[in-house]
Image 1 (cartoon, rainbow, N blue to C red):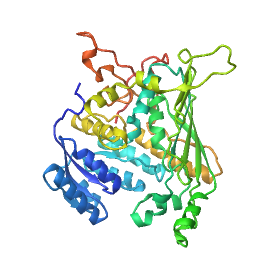
Image 2 (image 1 turned 60 degrees about the horizontal axis):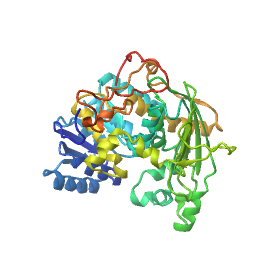
Image 3 (image 1 turned 90 degrees about the horizontal axis):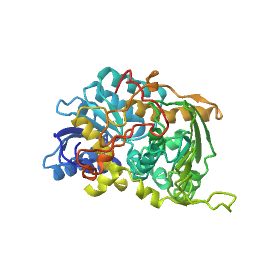
Image 4 (image 1 turned 180 degrees about the horizontal axis):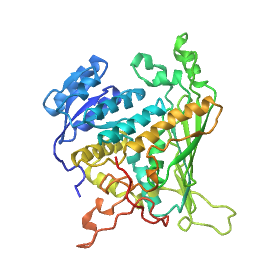
Length: 451
């Protein structure tokens, strides 16, 4: 197995979208010695010029720049394309890239329609080229530690998971027309779970969605839209953007899964509050809560027989004891990139899948099913919270789909040897723990198709 950060063969990529997020991610990619950014595209020429200059300074040659993604996708000197544009253009650009022979990674965001998710899947299947969502939260230290604990069976059988995108973004949204930020238009014109994947991605891996499990249906409800209007009145009075505002301040989405689990998602971006992804993992042996960073595990947490109820304890010691082996290796290698280091991990996972020409750890079925929640939640909200079926993008293959081959960046199979192969006695390596470990499942047969 390759060591963390060990360079592989050089990969020439194109980047579409170099706003604030795209430029930051480009810098992280340019910090990898085996990545060459050969082309850059954005609809704004000034952004292209600035990004090309940054790339030239970091890698020693200037990429080609353009303002039409189709021009970039048709270049024959690129192996992969990374899409970091506005939410509603991700699938459009990714589809065109795959049709032109490129592997694709695209930033997070919700889908505008169910149809665009189906087109993403069908084009990936037809071309044999993968499309990976760059869901960085899947590689967060807390999220991977929880995944490790679930695989070890510490929570027992998982029954319920919660998560949210709970972030005061009033100024970013309210000044979106000034700063050319696409988030504003979505809040003004849509009403639903606009940004589901930061919480849904890690949950999906915990309960094996698309590999022995899937989402069946969802219901969404939205509160009134009051917070952003107050912000406009106080900070940009008289701006016509403030009316109407469609997006409710709090959008709550409940999802039912084939194996019986429920998922609760919360979107909360236009009211004053501290940041939180509101995580909760609950099973037959215990519960973890992100807010307060508390945990109770039956058989592990202290119990006073004189108490009529259990008591919370801090998760600190557990999170150190059960740290995911990938993060052990990463801390030894040295954290880098944004969002506490998880940006580097998700980008590196994509690059190494390109180098080795194998399926990425987040495949096109994951990408489509996580994105589609936005479009479905809009439908449910518009119908007063009516249930909406979730499409099965695998066409039934989810029942027996195997995870991709194990590796350092796998989100399905945890291999302890990632952390340190020298920790085991000579000739012995810890056995990988497969998805669903601790649940008493029989091994699944191979999948009907792979992405």
